[in-house]
Figure 1 (cartoon, rainbow, N blue to C red):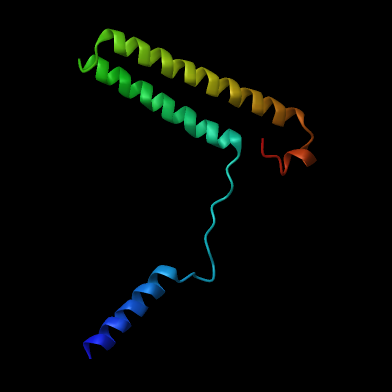
Figure 2: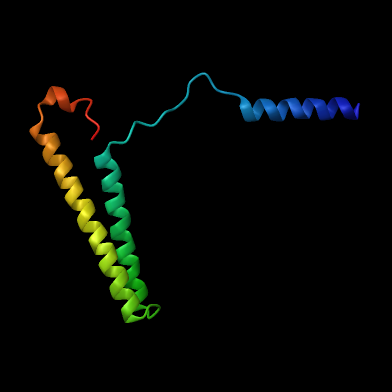
Length: 102
């Protein structure tokens, strides 16, 4: 009897783990611009956190300045890339833009 219960439990667990529902919810594909916008938001949030930590006295001046410069440089490169991709997208004809993933 115990062996039967263990086998039934094993089958139930395997079914639960490996069962694929008939309809899967798939998120839309991200474009490069969407990824860069998310990255920009993360960098800005990191800059706000860094500023807060510095004002709270948790970071020395030297570390704060180097980390701030690094984050600002990353933000500038992300913004430049977003601008470049949006300029390319805006200059291309609408028929080409439809499936464009830059």
